[in-house]
Amino acid sequence: MQNQLPLSLQMAEIDSFDNFIVGENQQAIFSLQNDDEALIFLWGEHSSGKSHLLQALVNQYQAKGLNAIYIPLQLGNGFAPELLEGLDVMDLVCLDDTQSIAGHREWEVALFHFFNKIRENNGRLILAADKNAVNLSIQLADIKSRLSWGLTYQTKTLSDKDKIQVLMLRAHQRGFKMNERVAAYLLNHAGRDLSDLIQLLDRLDYASLAEQRKLTVPFIKKYLTITAN
Image (tube, rainbow, N blue to C red; front, side, top):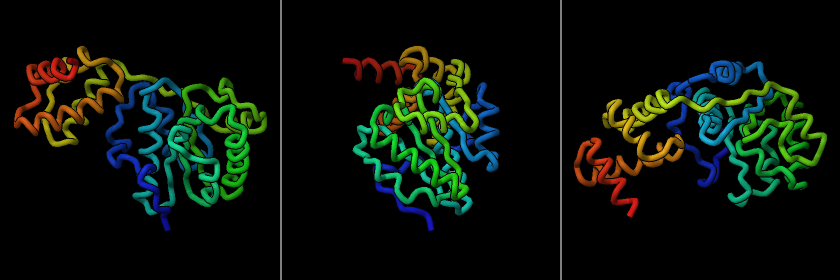
């Protein structure tokens, strides 16, 4: 039976491998979809696709009726190390933001014991962080070494061309059209951080519906000007 997640842990069902623009991340995606790879560590810059890939894999597992969970380990979420207790029996556990627990001994010890238990139970563990496992500020040597036991991939940030494709795809999923010219304008005038752009796209979608306007360059320009003041 699948665990019921607290509302704060529910993730966006929209994230899948189908709507991930691959860029230079082909090998990482291949390994994630290979069930024989029991341990994978992803690392990369903010908005390089780590969270999307973890959530896409969890969604894929759950669609097959398997037990899988995604947990963002940001300590600001108020999570305690006890969160990991009992998860070792799951088919897949994806831990995001691993860097946030570095230097917190209770968390490091909890992760060490969880790591050993899930391996004993033949479950898969996928972790993500903003740095390579070797460069994380983890104090407990045993868990730091274990994080490097499996495959490690650096997620590559997308080119501007690929980001434009992401915006157009996300717009299509929300039920409205965005042509390449409009997506390029958004990219050039609202920053290049993909996570921020996708959140902005949600707000633009709401604003365009409220005003019953199409998402055009003049509309985006007007919206950005108003929200900047």
